[in-house]
Structures are given as structure tokens and as C-alpha cells.
Length: 409
Ligand code: MLT
Image (cartoon, rainbow, N blue to C red; front, top):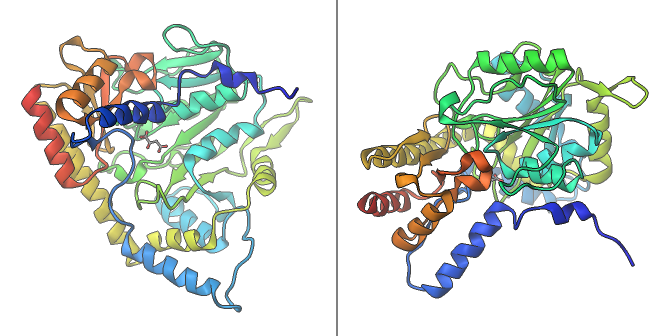
């Protein structure tokens, strides 16, 4: 009989968001008239920017024209999109990133999991606690961990607690780790990292031969000009960091799917024989073998993000969600809750009132207010006693949800 990848059996109950959906569906079935507002998963609600739609409609027309028709595209993405990304997102900020170092993909979630394909199984891996669960679960699936403890920590991973006491930025570890996952602006806490903090990580990585996986999916939500948008704004980062970016949240592409990963050519890691191998070369090989690229139509839509028409539309979209975040913050603070994040990030991280556990607060909000959020403990044991509220929803829903919550707490 065929056998399975037993590592999957080590995974806890379910991926956090399907688990929330399961509970919400059960509640909705039992209470069909309850007007549920979902501020749980960070999924966008506002329509795609007009510039992106227009570009995609034109791309569909191209596909109907023999002279313009496109079959398989380059696995790495079309050069015209990679060049715009390199220029607008990196070179304009003084980052020496070239178009050839950009790999267009269908999502950062997929890429942060897939990147493990090109690394060995014996790396020491550090994640923050709380953390975006995909970083942990993909390492469990790949067999890089032991079993989960009662508090949900997997053997073999190094957990770096991020708490209110350290401003939700992890202390640089004292032991040696090979792979480090950092996410700024942070999901779930909404915290950001200063240049000095990131410099300390880059210095650590360079002196230990470590690689930083830098997830910058929420960089567009940074409002403070002193906060870096990319790890490549930090000296030495192209020699020790891979960056993940996405069009999901800034341009509303969660359902359209387009993202990119930056693998600098200067980045190397060690082979079994001790020689240094370029990670660019491995990722290029991996993508060319396992991936056939993002559709031409979607890449044209992503390209329009950088157009003269697209730029103000994207900024307006980001501002819209950040106004939601401001409303959530202000209302919850006025209700006496301790609130973090939501200033340079679309997530608001709330201390649960009266010492309630994260899931108890989840149930109270669902049953008493018909509002869905995300229990902090779902992101790791240090998230216990916290709750994440997403700013991705309509203004009407956000205002209504805040009214219901503030009336009750
Ligand atoms: C979240 O809610 O944390 C995000 O939607 C997850 C994701 O982008 O995959």
C-alpha cells in the first residue's frame, strides 16, 4: 500500500483560518438570521482598481488576437513586469535590486512555503511567536520539526517571543540559527521594524551565515517615512535576505493572485561538500520545473499598479483600509481596551478584556456581537490573551462592528 507523508499527521487541528470558518459556519447554521461581520481573515473587500481592470480587459483582447496571443510565459514572469517592480519598489528607494532577481508568482503564501524546496533539512529555524502560521506549518510538512507540545510549540523550532514588552519585535537570538522568518509590517501584531532593528538582524545573519526570509506583504500600509519598506534598504541585506511581496493587499489581488519573490544573485548557502551555491540559481531551477508562471492577463493587471493612473488608485485603496484601521483603534481605545498595531499595518492587535482567553473572546464576540476576529493564540502560544481585528472590510461593516463591540465591552 502507498504510504503518506507522516509529517502531516503532526499538524494541529486545522490551518487557523479554515478552523475559524468552520466555527463561524456552525454558528451561522444554528443562527441563520445573525448579521455576521467578518473581520477575521485579512481578505480584501473593495473592487479591483480601475487601472488594473482596464489593463486586464485589454490583455483578454490581446489573447483573442493571433498577433498578440501568448502561450506559456516565462516561468519567472514577463520582463516588462519584473522591470517595473525592480524600478518602482526597489531602485527608487536606493535598493540595488535588478529585474532578473524578481520572480513573479501567484502568491506570497505559496512562495514562503515553496522556498523550503531549495534549503536543506538540517537548518536551525527561527520564527517569532505569535507568527503567520504558514511559516510553521510548511516546516512541519517538510519534516523540519518534531511533534507539537501541549502549548502548540513544535520541537526543533526556535521560537522568539514578541510581546508588548519588546514592542512586538524579537530579540536577536543568542544561539545560532540558519533560517529566520521576519514579517514587517507584522502579521498578526501590526508592529513595524526600525532600520536599526533590521540592521541588527542583517548583521546577525551575515556573521552566522544565516538567511532571512523577509515577508513584506504589508509594506504598502506603512505611513511613517522613517520605517523601511524593504529589507534591501538595509546595508548588507542582499547578501543574506530573500524578500516576499504581494499585490494581494495593496491592489486587492487576493482573488486575482499575483505576488513576487526577490532572490538576490549575491545570496549563497552551503552545499553538502562545503561549496557555496547561489540561491538564485536554485530558485530559478525550482520555478522553471514546478511552475509555469502567472497568467499574462493577471501580470498585465499587476503592471497597471505602477502606471500613472494606477498609482493614485492603489494609494486610495490603501488609505481606505487604513482609515478603517484608525476607526477600529480609536473605538477600541475609547472602550478602554489595550490596542496595538493599526497605524502602519492593516491589523489591530487587542489585549482581551478581563483576562479572557483568545478563543473565549472569539466566542463572546461571535455570539454576543456577531463579529468575527482571529484569536491571538491561533498564531502561537505568546498570542494567548490577544485578538486580531482586520481592517479589510467595508466602512459600513467596520463602523457597525465597532458599535456592537464597544456597546458590549
Ligand atoms: C491573514 O489573515 O493573516 C492573511 O489573509 C493570510 C494570508 O494573506 O494568507
